[in-house]
Length: 309
Image (cartoon, rainbow, N blue to C red):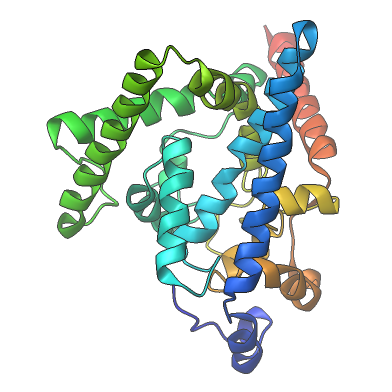
């Protein structure tokens, strides 16, 4: 996405150009840290027994699911200066999360173009939760897995790409990547059977399912309850959180900053925040506090509905 953003958004062109410089070193450092976290949580799963296995799987699943942030940064091609590295990391992260990168790029760029537009933002194809039940269902991750399975299988086995945000010239690419993805999954299944191994289940599939609610909670925080508007400073939320969460999420809690200046790499978003934070209308002090507030709002709305009956 281009860098034709001006001082009207709180930044002059020269500053934007400087902050938009990409870095292989910063990309490799971030990827290395995330890889070390995955090794540590995977080792925890390996060492855990009995009742300790489930929490270990959840912790590993959180680290695994937050590879979504690596996928997100690499489909923007801002994680690394190298296009090949961006595309390679996007493929690995996308395969682990059942989210092919070319498809996600088309989806996500449409989301950037039409953020919070109910008619055109693909993230709003499924309406945001308005009740506690709908909120918990979304947080569970089940709707996400159902959608990912049905869409990738349709692309792979029927060759039909119905999504309006995919350009006609890209449909063949989308079908091809879905078929490659399912060939990879078939190969993993075949090898698991041949070697009588449960490694894919223990270190990948089960943790991915158990950790998905944490990613859903994180993603819901980006726009839920924000203005239905084209103004990036009101239709998106920045969440101020601790350095560990920012590290795991590739600095994406600075989400207003990312939407306003999508060409700026993850490692410069804190500097963007320092420049534009006074313009940010929607902000939260931590994810737990935000979701406690959301749940309280849903419960209050339910009490009002029950009182009217």
